Length: 420
Length: 165
Image 1: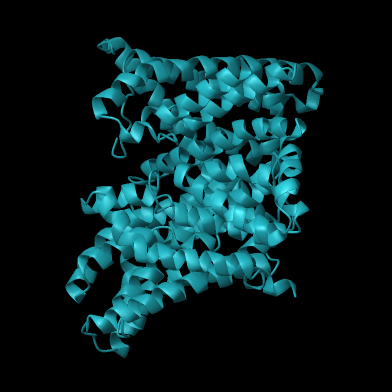
Image 2 (image 1 turned 30 degrees about the horizontal axis):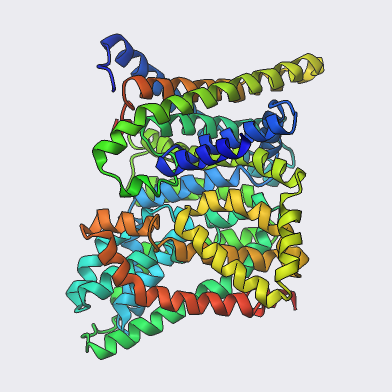
């Protein structure tokens, strides 16, 4: 009977039942089977609310929503174009750098493709890049800054897994830049091969772009200095970021009208945050019930019979997470899968911070893979191309990302250099 | 099959959405004010805002619940609709009422569980902690709103909250 109900819930979820409802159903079923009072699910919800960094999620999201609605995308493109656009493959490099910067703030919720894709697409075509390359680049770049502070995915992983968010921020730096470098080198190769004409470097243009974009560039510097300098906590940094961004877009650049636009921006933030945190609130109960029922231990027992080494485990983990990334969106995957994998990974000696980076990197790849890669759907909507042709265009980038994933999985030093 | 929505219900839903949008926005602003105020108070006045930590904890829940309720009306909840992605749009539309009805029932059960937890908490709360128990009402209230919106969506259709309104 229980199996039948679980199967029914999974089927309903696949048909489009909101994930949090499916998880709530699973939680209620689990409490019923364990002979527990379903009121303990509300206890878990209260426990979640007392998580020290939880408030950072709505506030960083708010900052991202304001930046997206204001003129930050244009200013970023202008600045990166003036500074690296003159290099071979420079325009593609501009797309990579702008998307990475923007995704770190917008939380890879598809806003990057919507906000930057529309601007970069005609610019890249005009520069002489082929449409297929351009589409592939913009589709995969939509999740590029996922490992950079203050990415929503890192915050969520830190809260769910109970690991240090500060350490995750440091651990994500080298893998994040490594991916940007690899994609940049590929863009350089394509630029050279297609003989893309380059524009001249101009100090005057760079100075003008710097004047416009300097306040945006100071943002990540300020956040990292504040957190790692010990001046503010992560939650306080998120509040300072939101206030700074409000002043930046509302007072300095005047891209948003604080009275007219604020209610819509607040509501958009609440919808985005609500759709993620409600999953977290019901999933916490379910995963804890599964942990109480020793499910990870049972998986571990089975795995210890078939998986002998850490290397084997990491290979299996990559394969599993790639499948998860293809089937689930990143936020639900973090909430549902991370707590179950953590104890197993620890038993194989995988560092919890390194695991976080591997976890997020796998899901970053999943963003651009069918059937539910959200980048593919948003890019399809934005550029008016079928999902499959976008997937084909993204394949060279995905191959590079798989190589990158293998590097960061099997060379832990890239994520943990600061611990040596 | 979805029914035509009577004007009374339409008015009620719009009023509800306006209230929820206001509450979500006000909670987010209050959360921002509390945490930023704490930074200022600590660094410039060597003090703190009383009960700021507890209040901000609840404000996150308020943003989350009212945001989740608004996400129902704008169909923005996260789904793993792998099967639905391969279906025709009219079949997906046909599936909506039963899925919303199931969602309404499950959220109703969660409401009941949350009420029971809240009532226990209220009974054993010390007199000076009662104010935070009142704030904790957001959990049953939030689930009941979710249940109501799913029910309205099952009988009629989601009320289409767009970014411009």
